[in-house]
Image (cartoon, rainbow, N blue to C red; front, side, top):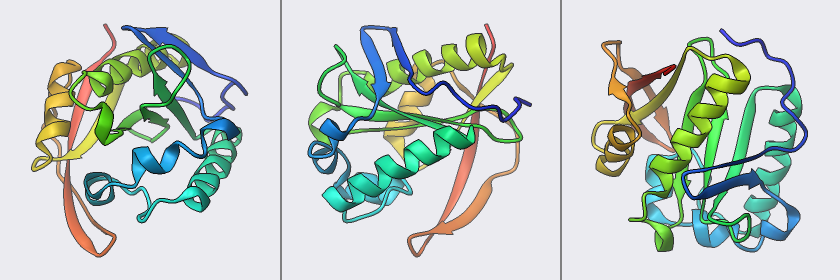
Length: 179
């Protein structure tokens, strides 16, 4: 398990043709276009509808979780500029859990799989993780494809069951071991 020490105040990760960077105030106007979509509302815990007020709340919460040392949320970009989606690393007792969301206009470019691999490398190299995990629903074909493309394998562990936004879910756990 990784100790819950604080993350750096600023993080920028590069690799696989991407720059993963901190969200900024300048990104608030772009966030609704990325996150206010039925797929994101259905498959993720991101609030819906997602407007600029939700963006402000998310940015503030991101900064709080970073300061607490529990979670990092980074904008997925190709050049450090316009955000195309988000990748998350959250410390859990099982090890770092990764998550992602890519704006509808930017799908089909391999952004999520590449961002997950870059974030996994950060967890291995900077946090000393032995394994990173993804938790996703088997019915979410796009996320299963991301997990597979990123090199994750389905783990033989019990499903995680719960309810989010009034609908039940059952999450599979996928893992990627330290290279």
